[in-house]
Amino acid sequence: MIINRNFIILLIVMSFLSCKKKDNVLFNISLQDTYPTSIVEFQDNIFVSLTYSHNEGFVGFADPDRLSLEIKDSRLDSADYYHLIPVHPPNQSLSVTGEILIEIDAPFIFGNGMSETLSYSIRIQDSEMQWSNVVVTPSIIVNK
Image (cartoon, rainbow, N blue to C red; front, side):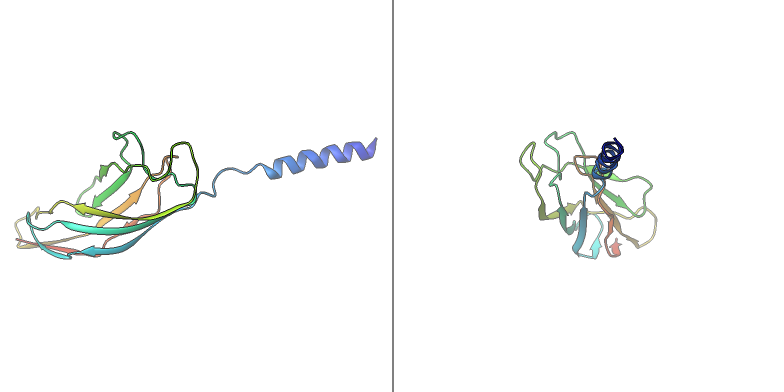
């Protein structure tokens, strides 16, 4: 009787230990390149090249109204959001890596000066509503 009770307790403990919260999702982005870093306002767009890896592939949304790319200008309080298409087949989980080239419309100077410096903070939300790490571009000089 004692052996059966110990065996049952051992099974219960093992079942709790084997249940893991799904917090081991790895979603990372890395900044590869930003160009140009000195521009004339209203004329030159900024290009940012990123690489990403997600161990379950949940990058992007099929619904075009779901905005998962966050880009924040360092001079502003709020970020802008954009849509990314899915990079994995529907209802499947697989590890993905890839590259994204982002084109940011030509920034302009807010003040009265002849130039301003800014940077962009970028992150991506996966379809499980988890955010990647944040990457920050190098300083970009905007000239009149």
